[in-house]
Amino acid sequence: MIEYDPHHWRSHFFDLRGSLVREIAYRVGLCALTAITVSIVFHYHEHIAIPDKPHLLVGPALALLLVFRTNNANERYWEGRRVWGGIVNTSRNLRRKAESLLHGDAASAQIVEWSIAWFWSARAHLLEEKSLGSATRLSAEDQARALAAPHIPVFIASQITSIIADARRRNVITDIQQQMFDADVQALVDHIGACERIDQTPLPYAYAVHLRRALLLYCVTLPFALVSVFGEWTVLPSFIVCYILIGIEEIGTEIEGPFGRRHNDLPLDSICARLEANLREVKNKS
Image (cartoon, rainbow, N blue to C red; front, side):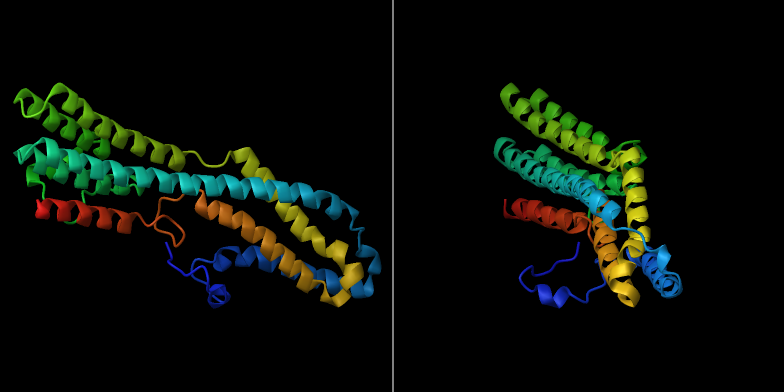
């Protein structure tokens, strides 16, 4: 994610990084090239111009499609951030309960280390990687077992559950306290499931295809509707309209999958690093 000051909008006018200009350049360029060609041909054959009524009628429908596309993508993006906010809070609560209820028992430190490994593995899982974090303090044996698991976050959740169950067998905690711990572990599993749902359920194919076809037809034929009014300047309004419309669609595509390494994806690395520092700071103070 690119950090920026939303109040200094003028400084971003010429930014390319993260603005998706490169991603849409060839499509906007195609529309501009079409507009140039239409302007040249119109100079010799004015009959190529078409009425602007079809574009006026289709414009509102296309705008609604784009609004729905962008709102859907934005909701997925913010849902992903809310889920990771839940991961942060649940991890902190799990650490808090371990410190308060286990009273310095060895299980407390184990829960912290496995919790740190959990959110790093969740971040790696969403990137189709396998990792427990570069600063993990788990033993080599535990790391090998975790990395060999088919679903590392679920395996780690099971390990935390086993640690809590062992503490209950040793009467370090009560049944009710065990249930309190289990609620947090269950929440972690729910969170990774929510992330997978967001990551694996893109916009329905039929909607995406129809929107892109309609957008392409609208932009490519737009110069024919504008050339009788703008003449040789047709390329300018065509370029502006196509840049805006195609850019909106590309923004939706960019942010609908918020888990990745692109400029506009959620900053999972920094979230995990801050959370790890937070949990270790609490541990060191204890």
